[in-house]
Amino acid sequence: MLEQLFYQGMIGLSLAMFLWLVAAGLTLIFGVLGVLNFAHGSLYMLGAYLSYSAVRILGLDFWVGLAVGPLLVALAGGLMERFFIRRVYHIDEAYQLLLTFAFILIFADLVKWVWGPIYQSAPVPGALGGAIPIFGRPFPVYNLFVIALGPLVGLGLWFLLEKSWWGRTIRAAAADREMAAAIGVDVPRLFTAVFMFGSWLGGVGGALGIPIRTVSPGMAEDYIIQAFAVAVIGGLGNLKGAFFGSILIGLVNAYGHVYAPVFELAFMYILMAAILLVRPQGLFGTS
Amino acid sequence: MLALRWIFWLTAAVLLLCIPLTGERFYIYLAIQVLVLALFAMGFNLLFGYTGLLSFGHAGFYAAGAYAAGLLLMRTPLSLLSSILGGALFAGALGAVIGFFCVRRTRIYFAMLTLAFGMMVYALAFDWRSVTGGDDGLIGIPRGALWLPGLGAVKMDALWAYYYLVLAITAAGVGVIHRVVHSPFGLVLQGIRENENRAAFAGVPVRRYRLAAFALSSFISGLAGAMVAPLENTVAPTVAHWTKSAAPVLATLLGGIHTFSGPMVGALLFYLIQEFIERLTEYWLLGFGLVLLILVLGFRGGVVGYYEAHLRPALWRRFS
Image (cartoon, rainbow over all chains, first blue to last red; front, side, top):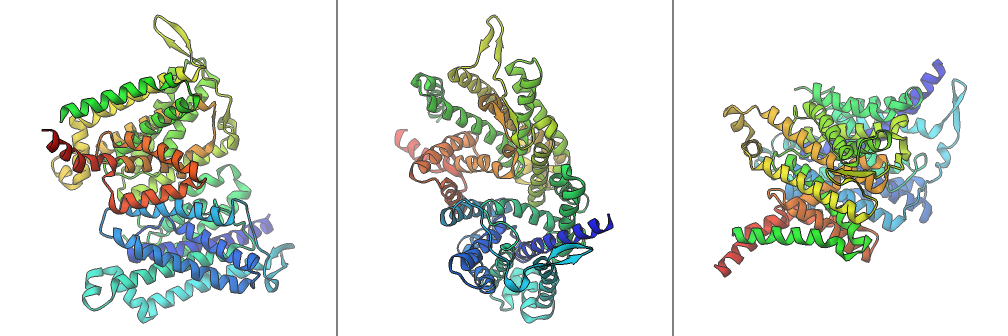
């Protein structure tokens, strides 16, 4: 019983860390640019497909694929921001949502066009293969690696935003665009950079998943909703909230799968709606 | 000006009545799809265009109407029309409950809330196997007969017969919306959209108005969904998935959100574009994505909005 609880908890944590990488990019972009990117799940999907191609089709090493795929995703994100999203900062948020929604449709078909409608996956890299026993049950080493990597990314983000010059500039622009521009910050270029960085994070989430999650054209639509749930629960624009929100959703999914399969799907949405109603600033936000 | 409008509506009515005369199942079926989407988009736009609230959960109400109508037809002796109305009423009641919560938030938070509630409907349809049939959905929904006073039971097995029923229901639904948006109630909704603070200062109970618009919008969306259950004879949970909320959004934007007939014109364009793209390539989502990009970036008034702002004045100058 206790073993089962612990084991499911570890599964939940590894789910949570994928979610965290995706939600971190979404949250960063919303926090700085004020745009809720519906297509962020599609960038995650693109990261998975590009890395998959690097590994499976070009025969590159897994780690090279992990480096190349997300960089290309960042490039795609940069183009998206520079030529499309930049044009709608000044208009109604509804149109911003709809613009990014258009990219979901575009990416969904592009991926089907290039890679076909079938499910794909890639082998686990050699060094992280196999499993080690946890309470007598084998737990994949790769999942442990992901669980360790998540908090490291969080720490890196915290250092970047709170301690570096770049982070101070970003926070200044997020707090007041005009003031930042007035004191010499190139705000448009900074926004493009932040959007690229957020896209890169989403791409890393996708690329990391290819050995243990299937790569399929439908992954974007399911994943973006989970990322939204995480971002809302932690508080829109709140990175610390997104981290703990990911853990919460990851655990809910893992335990729900075993103990309450009938409510597995609904529970996440109920949690999301409840937070929006009772605490719209999120569990970790200040009003 | 008035004459142009009458010519438009009369031509549309005559064309719609004549479609079954073509005798082509394909055209009749396509026309039913257009009518259903037109009504769905009109219901959606009541909230988006007239009240200023963007919902990403309307597929949930459409599905609620479809499931409820399907279950009524399968499990009760109710006639076809009563079942369709029953489905719409169920969706409206669900909309009143969900709307009660959703109107507490606006803008992005409203969009996220409707998304969450819409996906709850999806989850319920997927997981509540004993009632909804799980991922198989409802299978074998009978179309039943229509009870007409004086005529008794009229069989609806022929597609053209069902087309006329859909046409009548859609016309009635559009009539209701027309009456509502041109009433003082409709004007208050538009006032709230333009400036909610000013409306509140003028003594308008903003939330209550938004809730009423939400419930009516759900009812109309449910009515559209309810007509599909007896048409297809099946309902599957995918109709509730949030990605299905895209169709009314696209139709509405295509036609124009701040015009009455926009969503209906948009529904027609939606299927015309889909048919056109499908003849060239199977990747019609890509085409719609590009269309949506263009609409949002440079054409936010939609086709009817463009007509009213640019083409009609030009026509007027030439012919007057």
